[in-house]
Image (tube, rainbow, N blue to C red):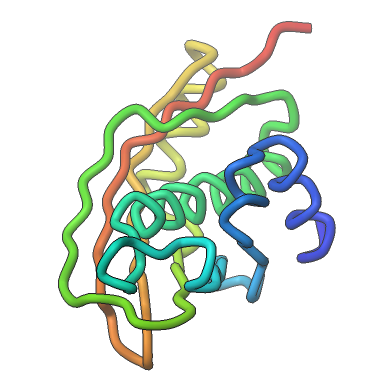
Length: 149
């Protein structure tokens, strides 16, 4: 899936991503980066709204896993189960979130659980960045379910 195809998919299937102005900044072997402009994500202090910041992080992790699962288990759906976010600094402009591609034992456990039980869980993180600095850290538990058929 190309970056433009992923962006169109997110805007169609997760309408909040369109309202937030989310765009795919990069997709690579290391991970996925999504970007959001400040204007539609402002709060009353003229900084980025906390809900928008956390939403971008959750969406980045979800989209990164979605791309990986499409390759490994094409008929799987994915949801967020639990999330934790730390806000480190205010965001005064456009911002991004980066999530690394899951690898290693945790990824293998997810694939094994999907094969054996039809569902599995994985924890994935994301960093929110603004002005060259990490301004937020996210950790989420995602659940994948293999669709029947």
